[in-house]
Length: 165
Image (cartoon, rainbow, N blue to C red; front, side):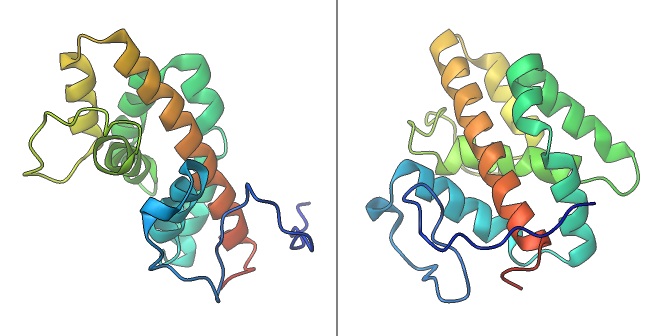
């Protein structure tokens, strides 16, 4: 049986600045990379309905390891495919990873040559990866996707525990 985690009495510099008294309007330029990831995750997850948050929290648990072992392309394709199943957060997770990697990541907005005319989706991300001729871009995207999946997992666990609701 899972017991809710208690808040850490001594703040850790690596933990996100989230909570009822945090300022969501903080400029992302003043944030470190880790804080920027967690702020993005917080913004994406904080207003989800309880049932949706539970699905996201459940599906995101194994996501960092899955990306590490199976690769970003396989995981994104699997998340998109889960859209045909009822009551899954797969497509939502794929779109949030795509949004982070394509628009929000400070690591070069990995495919900045692409027009921003349409909102990023998992399919858009797959398309960009397949067009990419850079192994370095794919490796950077995979590392960044693992880091974002970890941030989503942490924030989802905190929100699911009800500590900030």
